[in-house]
Amino acid sequence: MTSVFDRLVGQQAVVDELSAAARSAVGASAALDDADGGAESMFGDAVPAPRNSMTHAWLFTGPPGSGRSVAAQCFAAALQCEIATGAPGSEVGCGRCHACATVMAGTHGDVRRIVPEGLTISVKLIRETVQIASRRPGVGRWQIVLIEDADRLTEQAANALLKVVEEPPSRTVILLCAPSVDPEDISVTLRSRCRHVPLTMPGVDSIAEVLVGDGIDAERARWAASVSGGHVGRARRLATDESARSERNQALGLARAATNESTAYGAAEALVKTAENSAKAISAVLDEAETEEMRTALGAGGTGKGAGGAMRGTAGFLKDMERQQKSRRTRLQRDVLDRALVDLAALFRDAVVASYAAPVAAMHPDHSEQTLRMAGFASPEKLLRCVEAVLACREALDVNVKPKFAVDAMVADVATALRR
Image (cartoon, rainbow, N blue to C red; front, side, top):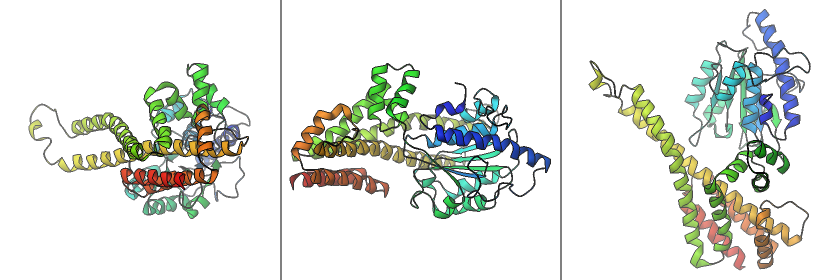
């Protein structure tokens, strides 16, 4: 790998823009050094600034799998890159220097990355992070805050962040990642203060090339890329993990099961159970490591004088951690279930496309025979109602409806739509 930006698949326009901005940032950093790090940001308003210049707040948007968080992390590495000179066309984000390596590994002292594990990002976390990031950098050029899934910011957290974006410290850069610029994903005011970097879904060829580069068989890489919906991480998992392929088949099988009352609700229950088990398996590994680390930090297992009472008064800390772990487990279950629902909606969509023989690429090309049968079984209008039922289920999960109730309601709606 010759550059951190090599991790971005099919996003050359974004790479060019971020590389140019990172080179511009070298000059901005030098100017701040000459001014002895003045209190005011030298970037000014982000909106009218040229696209190839540096600014203090950025918003990366794109659908899941487009690489928005990868783009933000690569940009953070490029801003801290030790060999960057700022000369036009010069290398930036080399991927070889200590700064690039530590940013990409998540261990750089001046880059704080917030990855929400629960349902929301709290105002307390934002305030604590921003307070630290408002100081002068310790080892790099900038203090950088990278917030993944910024659409999970609570209203209070968004307001706390807005204050910093409106009056940024001279050495602080804010990088936000969200699905879109829709007000439901990011507040209008916060979005208006950020430079917007939209990412698109990479093509099948680009994804397959990456997987082959990872050592995956070319035929399997091509298949995984074609059914991943443009999601590089999903494609990699489908190509390497049998359980991921099994979960996908289970989700797609729900379309047939929903047509028969004797199988519909059993299939729905099995889908929810699979998501629950997957979330538990992932959480178990994370929880065990976190719990052991916390207990060690609080003095468990120590020897010597006073070691016996080291854990007294720590029950509150452990309970807080258990609540956070439970919230993460809930989020994981919903994420796994949502992925299954996206696959199912895409299958009904493919059936609609097949009904009209439209020259549009299928989302599940390996299930073309099934979609042709679906197109022969139900009219396009009925299939569209099935798509709407799946999307309504996703919305219900998003507002905390219990998965069993949401999926059962979806199955009932699909069955009703197909009977009409």
